[in-house]
Image 1 (cartoon, rainbow, N blue to C red):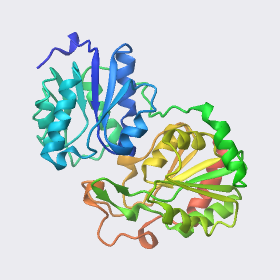
Image 2 (image 1 turned 90 degrees about the vertical axis):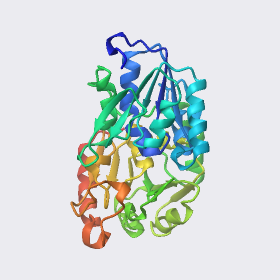
Image 3 (image 1 turned 120 degrees about the vertical axis):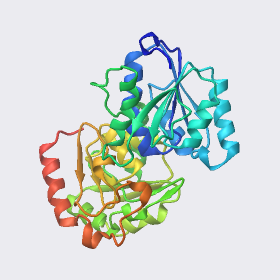
Length: 351
């Protein structure tokens, strides 16, 4: 065990390989590290879209590419251990619950290894953060336990994604060319529920509900998703009866963050892009269904979370949806969402 009071790391690795929403829920921990050690070099170890996202964060000095799910193969675990070893880090904070990732961190040789010890699976760490997998807690608060274990102040550590305002002229032109008013649009994220290692498409609020709400708001519509989300975006866009623009995989995360910060409203399912909009400071509505907002709700300066309490697996999204769950019987309806959104727009400050 190392002496926490003597800890003055020069090189820090933050390990959370996947996924977009999880990475954004870990940005409060990133802020705590930066507040404590502003001169330290911080590298984030992630893969795929998660790495592309966090590479734009102004509190991250560098990123290291690993498999989004290193525990899937011995080769990926060995590569991860080598990345950590070659980085000559003083301190690593692992937010994974995987015992195999814990083992890879243990073999890295980093002297100070902090990680989540869920049900005894953190044996590769020399500072193990106790975690009861059955306890109902928000993921961001669980991640902050790593900072608390190091004695760091977590009182002013919001989830945050920086906004790059210099990208706006290009986006403004693109909106205008599509007939979208750049000052009066709603940004919709109708997809989600699909990540490496997990499929939970039941998270998606019905497309007709998104379209009806967009018509009632009387705003131009910008639909955003990943490269695989064209059909999900079209299912909404074909029904909105307003000027609309569908962008499936056509934007960087920095551009999406900026669009969210300048929109009248961003709205989406329990998905990484909804977390991104909230962390970028835009007015954001998150619609939850078969997942628990008490664990996974996005946070930001102006966020409305809408959810109808219903059956939920005790283990969280890793267990999938509760048997028989569906939006018609268990989910929040468009009439209630519409009323709550109108109140939200009337009472919240413009971004």
